[in-house]
Image 1 (tube, rainbow, N blue to C red):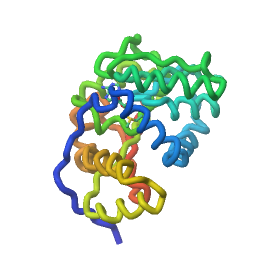
Image 2 (cartoon, helix red, strand yellow; image 1 turned 30 degrees about the horizontal axis):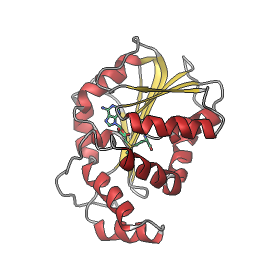
Image 3 (cartoon, helix red, strand yellow; image 1 turned 120 degrees about the horizontal axis):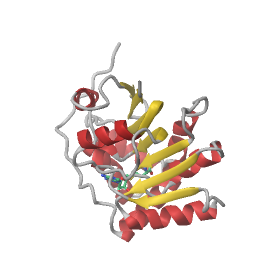
Image 4 (cartoon, rainbow, N blue to C red; image 1 turned 90 degrees about the horizontal axis):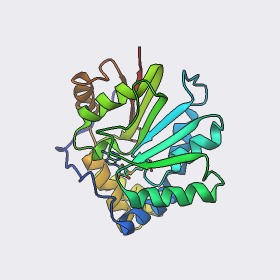
Length: 229
Ligand SMILES: C[S@@+](CC[C@H](N)C(=O)[O-])C[C@H]1O[C@@H](n2cnc3c(N)ncnc32)[C@H](O)[C@@H]1O
């Protein structure tokens, strides 16, 4: 039997909500404490990838944890993380330095709406938990398609919006040890995220047309997978 989720309309968050240093530090603590299994799962998806270019871009890298875990798993990849928040990038550089990867990963302050890279530059473009903040996802998809190399890959992960389980999410967060403010951060992110249908409609009107959307209802995640022809 297929599960059917009831959803309320999307409540978008502001793109720049992680600009403030206190919010950025709070997010970093939350991510390192609760999201490590998620990052490891994402990195596992890249295990057997044979990239046409070793350059990898992490969009909305935040405090850099995904970029760091990718660098650990693939020492031959050259990883660049970009973000609009210089405070997030400051924490990302600290996190990378602590892992001995300070010279390996580059962190640049840019918006994904205007990427400062040549066409076909990256063998892989990734992004986690950022799509739900983008003011103009179709514009960013166009930039992603442009900088992804031919035969290269794009993987965009984000939350899946389901609201029927609000109280269950709250409970699950509590059981995981999240404080009220951390549960609120998670719930707000889920409410700002897209449903399967919405994300497919976005893709169909974008340069990532033909991408596959994979849904993980257990982890409440979606993944846009695209290979550039
Ligand atoms: C919830 S955090 C996720 C961070 C990281 N990817 C992770 O998985 O932990 C989302 C990040 O996306 C960034 N962001 C939002 N809009 C952006 C844009 N247009 N271009 C680049 N980064 C953006 C935010 O500043 C924030 O640091």
